[in-house]
Image (cartoon, rainbow over all chains, first blue to last red; front, top):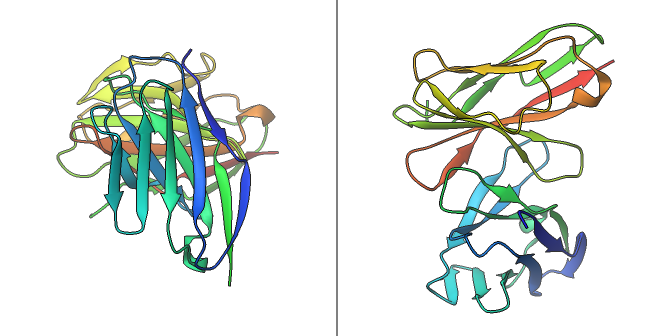
Length: 111
Length: 111
């Protein structure tokens, strides 16, 4: 119940394409859903986050879509660039301090 | 400094050796977290501090793991009698509210 399931494990996208990463959760107590971007040898960096009272949030080329009834949320990267090649983690927070992370998606954007 | 700083960046320890990993959080951040990230996996929660109080240590894998934050700023994660399964990246994060900022991590390799 505390898990966050993330898919796909890896993703290859052409430059300019749309990258889509999906996450699903079961614990309805989760109320904050961030996405983190991690480059090799670096710590995770917050990319964008959403709360369940909205269905979509957009920041530049990054959009989170949130489906509360399905308990799913996804990250869309529009106009994907080679510099976006990294590992992406979804996470959930049950209104406390503890983040539950997904298993990660390794994105490669081909030039 | 501007971000969360961790040291050392890399640590190689012989099995059975004790290690100490340091975290300098962002100045003024009340909350401090330690996470463990195994290769190819998402970060997993280890422990949480609010100022100097360790409010949650439920994620510490065994009693060989010990964390402290005596003055409410710098924190140290200590691992006694290291085992090969302790090999991982240890991430520290700090926050003022919901958003957590991660350091680059310490990669621990136990040989």
